[in-house]
Length: 368
Ligand SMILES: [Zn+2]
Image 1 (cartoon, rainbow, N blue to C red):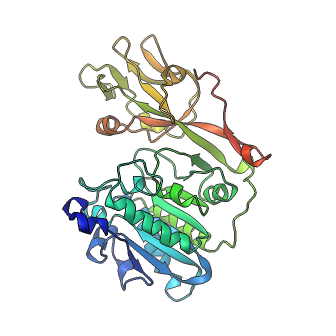
Image 2 (image 1 turned 90 degrees about the vertical axis):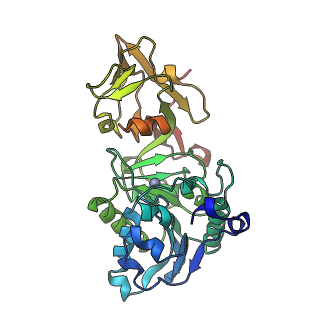
Image 3 (image 1 turned 30 degrees about the vertical axis):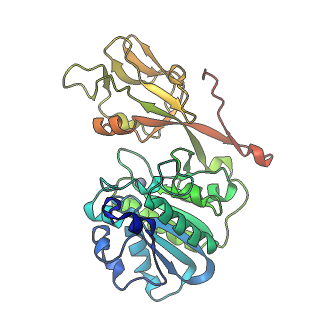
């Protein structure tokens, strides 16, 4: 379903397909084939013993197939004959991008930036996803799980958009490492966090069996939960990090990863992505700044420039000025140019006092 090819009238009526059963043999098809068997983004309600459904979202990014593969295996196992322990509402997202093996198609927006709360320009997708949200909310979901993959060396982790005990307990059942983020806006998990515990799962690179296995075991476990504790997880059971900073390479600078190649302004370590989810102490070397004054730029979630707090150049070495943990570090020049070098996260402390003090980031002592 290409937005660019729709007339204004059709676009105004872009709606999800809503089904009360799995189309026959749908589970046999890989993500790339779903567009031949479904008529667009599809919401499927499957009844189970407990009425309040587990909402499960897969393939918002067409090339991130672990979620669909986990659902296929979960539902083609014993739940072919046994009832589900809890109802499940399955959202199958961007099947046209999945057919092409892409995150999204050139004339599509990124689906996971278009949910209610989005700050992107309004598209027909916004209305369609608001409608999915409204349908799901009316079913009073028990919880919401949105399943993704990523590139680079990252561990599996769960992310939340609210510091809420039930969401944190849901997240920490997937991984000890939990990431709290508020940017980007317009993501499914943030839209659903308004009315139920909601998490995003990052299951490592697509196509790896371990990501599918982990997601499937987690879904099975979540379907069998009676309730989620409204007590904060114990600090020893969770490593909670807040995304506070995005790091970019200024457009006017040239850069490379590794030692070979032409002269450039910044020469990064070849395997910089190995530092993902590692707490880096002050002084950690990230790159050689071969041109005088060459520097990264760091911005906080309000868009304020925090470069001086995060980085310094000493004897031509570009190093961390304070401790932080990178995520989504990539070594693809194109990805850095189009998006960013990485995000930086800081450890949060869970406080078991008043509701307004559930958690706070480590104080940014050195921030200006
Ligand atoms: Zn994704």
